[in-house]
Length: 190
Image 1 (cartoon, helix red, strand yellow):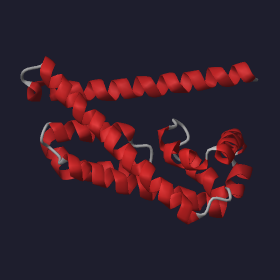
Image 2 (cartoon, helix red, strand yellow):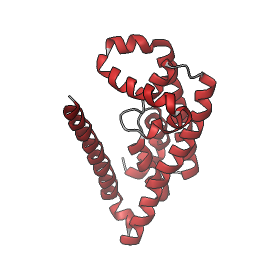
Image 3 (tube, helix red, strand yellow):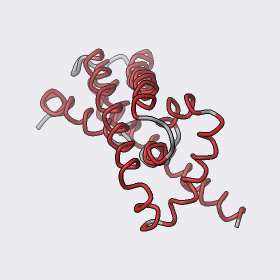
């Protein structure tokens, strides 16, 4: 199956699935595919907005209903939950909007917020704003990457497979570096 056919058949479904979870890599790739003409950028952004908003809303309700039990079963999450709660008291709206941009807190953040005094309606309002910003920025970054790459490479379609590998490799390196730094900070605190 060619990359073009795969993107046409499964691209939007991958955007939805990735957006329900931590889907930055999928969304950047979808933005790049939109630049190549394989997907529609407005549709990618819309699906990412819906998936991102719906995913965080589900995690909010998981926290509302099962949060305390989850923390008892997974005590290593208590440290992150405490950090989110501390920030939530001071910056409620900004934290709800920005939690999807905080690596490692994309899923846990809404769960912890669901355990707090934040109402579902209040969370939904700011979650929609955050999901809109996230969908436009991340898909737009992939689209701009494709546009920028076109300046450097005359026949981009011939090299699009390599470009996709570069995007995935960069995303993986950023994730690994962030994880390494988080572990190092934790070791220094302990």
